[in-house]
Length: 171
Ligand SMILES: Nc1ncnc2c1ncn2[C@@H]1O[C@H](COP(=O)(O)OP(=O)(O)OP(=O)(O)O)[C@@H](O)[C@H]1O
Ligand SMILES: NC(=O)c1ccc[n+]([C@@H]2O[C@H](COP(=O)(O)O)[C@@H](O)[C@H]2O)c1
Image (cartoon, rainbow, N blue to C red; front, side, top):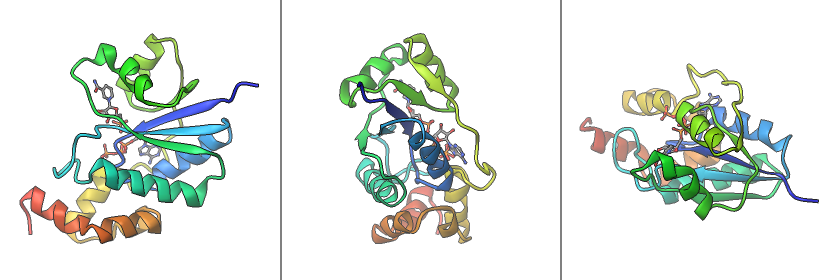
């Protein structure tokens, strides 16, 4: 029988427990998971401090601990033409049948291409968002409790909080 592969795309700047709640939901519905690391070309900026490679490590280590299904982590660069983006993403990803996203543009582009899209519930969005985690990093507040320990490990190994300060022009 054909395997059902679910595709979940995000920037993961950084990966957090909100993402993990979505992944656990996806894992109940599919045979394999494809994670797209979006905006792979971006790093070293206030909204996108981490490189694609660092985000691959965060997601891979986090899923090794939380998911027992096969999964694939694929960096995907942005392109200038939204109308071609679905083909672009499909061209570098393992084949997938279902998409999981709450991003309105992603939802529209995939639905227009005839792909089934599921938008999972938000999990405590006021705390579990990349924006809030980066704010806390800059403010010197607790951010570690919002991400799996292995993700905090990747960020600390690469001195990620210091980098975020540097690229944000703060100290
Ligand atoms: N707390 C959450 N619960 C459920 N889904 C979430 C949560 N936070 C983000 N998502 C979803 O995960 C996907 C990837 O999100 P993304 O990597 O941009 O994280 P983000 O926290 O929204 O980041 P940022 O605040 O930097 O924009 C999107 O579909 C987004 O809606
Ligand atoms: N034209 C494009 O390159 C295009 C279109 C739609 C989504 N995307 C990317 O998909 C990702 C969506 O993730 P978020 O839901 O985290 O915003 C982002 O990295 C976004 O840049 C890119």
